[in-house]
Amino acid sequence: MDKNNKSIFIIIISIALVIISGTFAWLSWRSQNTAMVLTIGDIRGLTVSLKPYQINATLSPVASYTSSTNVVVVDVTADNKKTEEDNFKLFYKIDTIDDALKSEGFKYTIAKCTSNCSNANNYTVLNNAGGDFSTATSNSNLNIYQETVPANTTYNYKVYLWIDSNAGNQSNMQNKTFTGELRAKISETLYTMMRDNAIIDNIKSNFVTNNNGIQFNDISSDTNGKGIYIRSGTENDPYPIYYYRGAVNNNNVLFAGFCWKIVRTTSTGGTKLIYNGLPSGTNNDQCTNTTGTATQLAATSNFNSNSTSPADVGYMYGTRYAYSSATGTGRYYAPDVTYSNGTYTLVSNGSYNVETKSDISGTNLNYQHYTCGSTTATTCTSVRYVYYVSSSTVYYITLTNGKKVEDALDEMLTSSTNTTDSRIKTAIDTWYSSNMASYTSKLEDTPYCNDRTIYRLGGWDPNGGDTTKYLYLGAYGRTQSPYTPSLTCSINDAFTLPGNTQGNGKLIYPVGLLTADEIMLAGGKSGNSTYYLYTNQNWWSGSPFYFYYNGAYEFSVYLAGDLSLFKVNSARGVRPAVSLKPGTKFSSGDGSYTDPYVVE
Image (cartoon, rainbow, N blue to C red; front, top):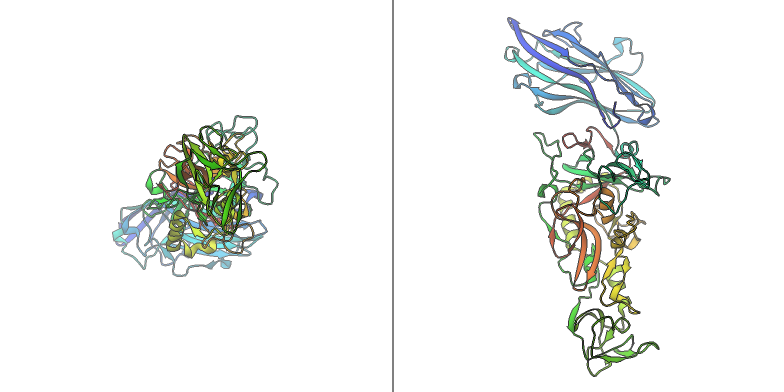
């Protein structure tokens, strides 16, 4: 059996109820397949078997399930070989059921034995009243039993299917049909499921043709990654990072009434998910949304309402130094300033002087960024720092109270006093408060990175900063050669709940956004319409890109699936990310669109 298939197809049942005479009905139950026994061994440890494998029986109404005839019995064994408890579940996967069979007369009964089970007297009925199919619907699952099986324990069950002669309108059931499958599930954690199927990403393997493994400079494909991978460099960690990549259809999850896609595991063994819309199907048990606005929150959002300051790339931010522009010719410029008694003074530094610039084209302000903006004065109560020049126009921020450009960059990008929520954080927190607060206990407090570290200063470097270059931030550098996505984050930019020493403690809910690095791991780079994060929509990541000369930009996923950028005051889709706690188990599903993993 394929170890990716967590469903155990036991018996395919074909049932017809027909009146023979009087008020007696009979039920023909015939197995069309040989049942399969799940034997996974040490990978999961809980072995489940069901007998008999083939059934041919004719049922007539009886007064009790204990009747020796006219009752079909399926023996079930759940043998837990592990050193930890595990979950076991029985259910009917119903294909069709006629309304007339949703009768209290059509029943199932379950009995359990814990020792000496060759003696029928040692089985105890688990549901004395007997279950029926009154809540069953076609194309759905009907749970009939589940429980936790302790470590190193074997439980035996008998599942009875019968017609109660004392209940139900039997004549109404004649010539009606019921088709479906009896299935058993064993739960396992999402983490171990990924672990058992992962391949390290720095080697040649199935769907990876390069001898050095996945090439992150290119998109995922059938030759550059499709499946579950171990992030090289973490393979010897206590919890290696496993991640999905490419055109996969086995990472869908139904949790908290929403559909999600598994992105990766965390350094603590949790499982990070990205929002993928509301469930679909007759019973809201499928996750068939693949493209369109249904894959994101109903309302789009700006990342921030303003884009005129480098601070605006922040998931939270503090002091904003908004840019201004002016004609720059004929002003005094200096390589440095001093400050005393409320006054800045332009000063030389030994290599460069205070001088008037009649021509500011090219890069001739690279070492003389400070100016009072005056054609006559070299002192001022506020001073300008010029970071970009275009033709005769300079773009600058204004500094006061003795601060220099280094101080401004610290306040905008690295200061721990960043306390103002971005527009997108407000949108995500509002949604979470209304929809997810009751599920917080199931989520781990993992960092959500908003990496504002500086990759290249450009004109923001006072000592030779090129005034024709921009301020690029951390994730941008990792999307350039040698293309090295990273899952680490500085504490200042790692958003966590209070008390978490791995982060800044500024979140009120354990929710955030994916990073550009996680999108690269998933398969995004240039246009890619086949990897699992593609939705044919524009949606935000949590990674800053750069501050252009006149605006702040954030990484996002573009319509074509590109890892692209948008100005932060643009309205784009919102797809929150959460992380399930380590040890979270799924009770059913194979991760497909129509049978997602169900986290209960």
